[in-house]
Structure formats: C-alpha cells, structure tokens
Length: 332
Length: 173
Image (tube, rainbow over all chains, first blue to last red; front, side, top):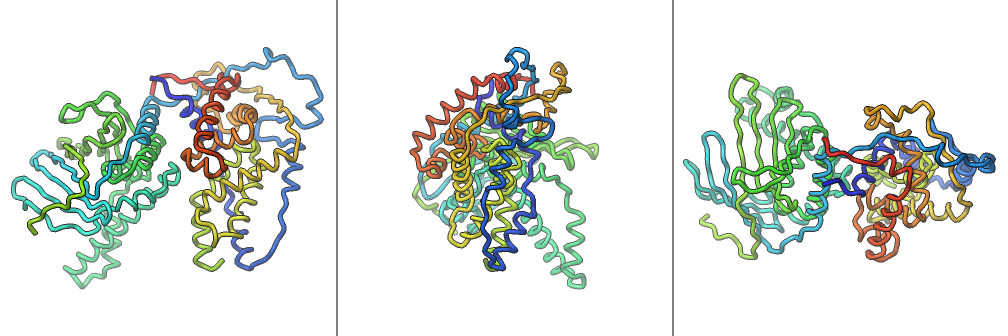
C-alpha cells in the first residue's frame, strides 16, 4: 500500500529543513540580557525590509520587486523533472502503525495484568505481572523450574500511567528524551556496580571502580540506545496511544530499522516485526507488534555469534493484557 | 530570571530550538527571516518565562501571531523561481541526495499558496506532529476546523505541479 500523502509531506518538510540549526548565541544573548534585567525594544522593521527586498538562499534566486515586472516565461519551458523523494517501505509501515496506534482506545482499570512466556535456549517460564497504574508497584507471579512462585512486590518499579502521559510526544523531543534516559540508566548502572564492588573490596574507591566498570561498558551508539529504549517502552501496557504513536515515529527516523509487515510471532500470530542490528556488537533486537499498533506481541533479542558460537534468541511472548480494578491477591 | 529559571530556559532552548527555527522557516519561506522570528519569539518567552506553563505552545502561538501580522502588513508578491541550472534530473541516484537547499524552493512555492492559517495548520500538524486538539487550542478554532482545514490544504498541496513532480514513491526499501 503506498504511503499516505501527509507522510510524504512530513518527510519533505523535514528534509527541507534538516540543515537548519538554531544559533546558540541567540539563547545565550537573551539569557544575559534577562539576567541583567536590561529592557530593550525590538522591532521587526529590519526583517520586514529583508523580505520585501528578496533574499537569496543558497543556489536559488528569489524574485525581487524590480524583477516581478518582467514577463514570466511560459510554463512549459520551465518544467524540470526532479527525481523522487522516497519514503522507504519500512518508514511507510511505521507511519501507518503510528496512525493506527494513535486511534486505539486506552482501556480503563487501576491494575494491568500482563501474562507472558519467557523463552530461551535453556529456559521456559510463565510470568504474570500485575502493575498498579497509579503507583507503578509491580507484583510478579511466575511458574518455572527453580523459581519462587511469587516475588516481593517491587515498589514504584514501573513509571506510572501519569508519568508516561507526561513524556514528550514530539518525535524529535522524544528521541532526545529516550537518549537522555538511556544515558542516565547507564550512569546509574555503573554507579551501583561500582558500589557493590567497593563493598566487597573496600580498599579500592568507588570512583576507581566506576572508571573500571565504565571502561568495560559496551560502547553502544546513540541509535542503538534509542532503538532499545523505544522497543522497551512499547512493551509497557501503561503507555498510552499518543506515546505509542510517537514511538513509532521515532523508529521511522532511526537508521538501520528493518520492518517485515507480514511476519508471525513464535505463536503464529500475524505481526509486524520491527528489528535492528546493534551497531556495537551485532545483537539483534526485535519487537513483534500487533498490526493495529495497539500492543507488542513478542520482544526478542538474539546474541551475535561472533565468538564462533551459535546465535541464541531470548524472547518474551505476551499472552494477554487485561485491566481490572481488583487488587492482586498475594501470599506475601 | 534566577539561576534555576535560566537553566530551565537554556534546557528548553537546547531541546526545542532547532524545531522552532525550522517551523518558523516553513511558516515564512525565508530562513533568514525565520532566524529573526526565532530570536523575537525567544525574547518574548524569556520575558514571561516564570508565567508560562507550556513554553512550546507559547512559542508556536507567538510564531503564528508574528507571521499573521507580517502577512497583513505587506502585500503578497508572486515568487519567481530559477531552479539551479546544473541539476541533473536524469540521474536516478540524485533523488535521495537532493539537498535541503534544493528542496526548499519547491516546497516554499507550494506552501505560499494556502492562507496563513491553513499553512500554520499544515506545518504544526505534519511537521511538528501536534495533535488536532493542540492546534485548535493554539489557533483558537475548533478541532473540527483544524481537521477539515488540514485535509483541504493537503488536497490543495497535492495539486501543486511543482510538488507533484517532486513527490512520488516506490515500494522498494
């Protein structure tokens, strides 16, 4: 199905302005004036004159008032065939998903029950998470070899529904937000690992351990981080329609994203598979979306087989998502 | 502004500055004028920073108002365009490498045709990805008006010969 016109127009507007950047001095200048409380009258007189006189932009000449009097050449001799601006098939599908997602209803209910199956080469387990949409508390019930049937409730483990509603939904802003979030999480992880190591060996300082841990952290590219964050966020049932819609748009502008619009998940359900190979180490992250963009069916990652071993895939397969006002019954 | 407010302002500008400048460019067809509008918008925002709840919405409203004032104050002159003579239209590879500078004149010529209100709706809806409700709120019109204006403007843009030549898609990735 060909892309919709508004998607092409969006692409054209972006490509026509991608080279323009806000000059940093403007904000700095404004801040310095407002800090010193200087009052200054600004008019747009100069700018208006600029428009009337005509401004040349790059390679193109725009008519000035004096030229507008000369006769226009006939239309036929002015036609130039310009090659096409193309939206890839992957982008087209992602923009379609974005549109359907925006139109889905957000179900009501204080608690979300997410039932899933986790599979890996040596593991198979069944997990039900119950999330309190208002506090972000998460209860976990599970069934599998050598695992407790219920974990202690994780308080405020998930962002609340209200928190998600506050995330930016402008794609550029969301992308920056996801990147900032990823880097903050990396910093927290480095710091907590360092503290644990210092606790085990107090002779070495936390800072020294932080440097050591940081040096060993995978050097993921910005695109790696954004894709993982976006795919991860799509998994959460508390994410509302506008945020889902915006996440698909972020994916549409992330390089390296591959889309298979007639895929099936491991349970045979029709899905749109969105995947990407890490720039860093060739790991493949994939998310299988319900074709209406309303929820994730499966989330997988596949290790790369660079060490001569086999590539191994771990998957979380969503069985059902329900919302209820009934609190979870717990044995703890 | 105190130190905390200055930092918040600076953060807002670093996150939103490029988008604001590009929106201004799409609303005015003039990158240099857009820079002036961008500066003016930020000045007004800084002056009211402590009282503004939604800085992004405030900036869009200011941009739109300045553009409207401008278009009333000067007569609209038809633009004549000379496409870069050296452009090779027969080269199949050159499609995707058309630079922003080369794309702008065609887009601007098309965007100059709708009314300022129609243009703002198209830019805010499709470039800035604002919702219908948000745009309605910004312009003081109903969401229904935004919806119908957007579709009518899209249909109008589709009919622009310059854009039609430029815009076509293939299904190959």
